[in-house]
Image 1: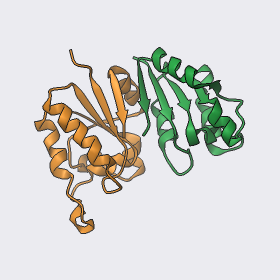
Image 2: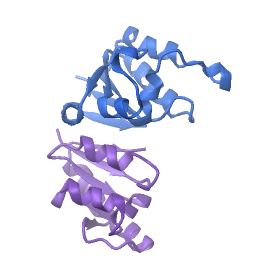
Image 3: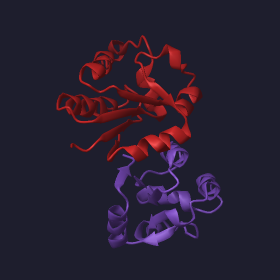
Length: 98
Length: 119
């Protein structure tokens, strides 16, 4: 079964993103929202981790959170809240990293 | 058939209520015969350290609750090998019998459950 992993915490000073990337299945996807979108800032350590993970079309970011934080985003597919809901339905289950 | 649930517990035991709440979910689900698994990840593996003395910081011991998991039918207990190794915890010193899994096995574990909750 496929999983959509959702992370909302900043990747700095916390292990959620690194651990999620370690145990992400080949058919799983990752959605970044809230402070987790800071991982998309180019030149940052988590940005390098995301690039190395090579998620391609399986990495998403909530667009309004990206815009609010001015992090820029050339790595993740941007989604709005309607897209968030569609993704939640597309995958068999959602794992929110609380 | 009830949906299976994997509980991922990734907070250290005496840092807020998360560890105890994850354990409470597992025990409550076990009491109702739900098909459950529990995975200790990141700082969550510190819950498994033997001989902790939380009364020194005015906390109740989690050990008794952890030991109760198999009695409540929660026998699918897992720990992340990477998390253990990073924290200097050896699998044979843990307070609870758990299956130690590498990254690939963790991905497969998550895939086989109907639902996942991470605390």
